[in-house]
Amino acid sequence: MNQKVRTILLKITDYCLQIKDTHDYFKHDKKLFINEKSGFIYRNSITMPILQIGELAKMLSEEFLGHL
Figure (tube, rainbow, N blue to C red):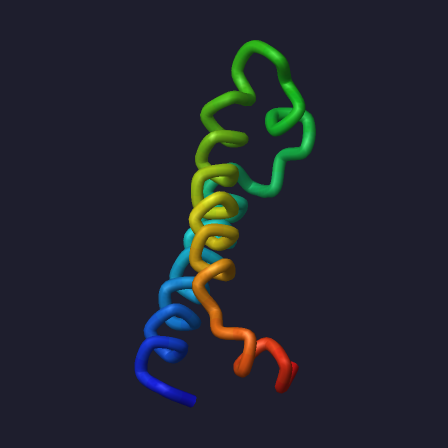
């Protein structure tokens, strides 16, 4: 695995940990997450790392993805 792939995977891991920490912070409160008025903070805190993971995943090489 080359350094670029390693760096991408480390960043993806960091974003996954941010998602976990956000869920922990909001105590995995599903009602808050789906609340139309006040759930946006929780949802936005989860959505941004997911978007970043998607952008990073697009940067992974075909060679790397072929080995999965």
